[in-house]
Image (spheres, rainbow, N blue to C red):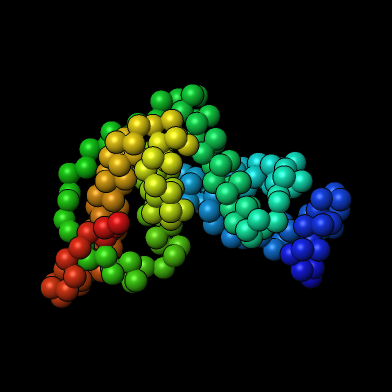
Length: 196
């Protein structure tokens, strides 16, 4: 296995074997990102494929500033955003789903869920909520940055995050009632699950 510096050097020389190594090394973590942004597995696979095409086409623009993995993740996030924008143009994506259940769940409830279960909950969110939630809570972008990336206003980003958090709480109550009840009954931390 090549070290990162040698791998980048070979990638910039269009080495097919280096690209295969890059794919084998990074596709699992990048696919995890795709799954968070996509509604279905096949959509995540499309985003991953499109991301690797972008990576291949743009490897010369990598300036060795920061990690290669960070650069790759940024491409996947950008491809996911572009994929979402295309879907919006093709159909109207509703972001006004009614949320009626607003129970409070302690934030440590998620320590009882596997990462697969948590990703599954995030994937249940409507497109707009899912995009903002991922960008804010997982990728660490600020609302003004999200607004610029998504073509929203900053207040829209904040509203969608709030609605995403409430909807995730609703999902926990519906899908994992024993976990939620145990924490509520314990009288421990009463913060919202996603109190960022």
